[in-house]
Image 1 (tube, rainbow, N blue to C red):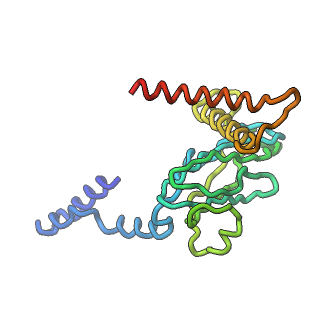
Image 2: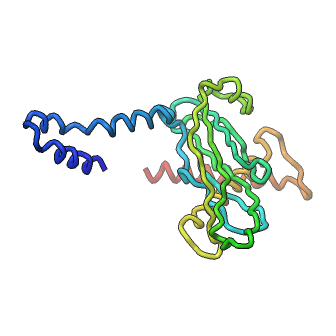
Image 3: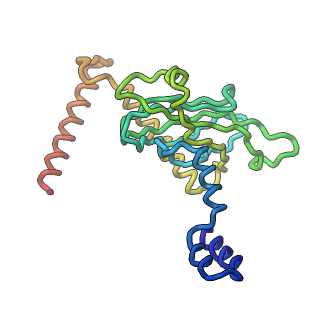
Length: 235
C-alpha cells in the first residue's frame, strides 16, 4: 500500500526539480494524517491479545442457544481488568462477564447466544447477526477482586480493546474455525471444572464411599513429581 502511494507520489511530481523528488522519498503526507487520526481513536497500546482477534464464531443452530469462545491474554506489564459489553444483553451473556488478569495470564471466555430462527425470505446461513460485543480494558493496581464498578470509577482510564462481530459457522461443515472453536470450548470447560475442585487446604472431602478425591489428588501429585523428576534427568 505504502509503496504504491510512493510511486504515485513520484509520478505526480515528475515535472518538478530534482530536489523535490529526493525530498519525497518520505511517505507522502496524506497517509500520515490519516494514521494519526486512527491512532487517536485507538488505545495507545493494546493491553490484551484476543484470539480470534475480531470475530466471535458461533455454530449456526437456529432456535438454540449456542456458544462461542475467545482467548483473552494480558500482554501488558501490569494487572488488567477486562469487561464484556453487548448490544443484545437479553439474548447473549458472557462467562465470565469480566475478570482481572495478571501480566501474561490468559483466560478463555465463553459467550452464549440464542440464535434466532431465520425470517421467511432469508437463506438460513446468510442471516447476518447485527449483535456486537465490545471488550473494554482497564489497568489496575495488582491483585484484587473483579467488580464491574471498577470501570465506572475510572471511566477516563478505560480503553475499548476491540469490537467483536458475530460470525456463524455451519456446524455440519468441518472448517479450521469450527475446529478451533471446539478446542477452545473444551479448554474453557476443563478450566471451569478445575476451578470447581476443592481448594487444596480444605482437608479430605468425603464423597460417597470415602476419600476418592484425596486419593486422586495424591495420584496426581505423584504423577507430577515423577514428571518433574524425569524433566530433571532429561536435561
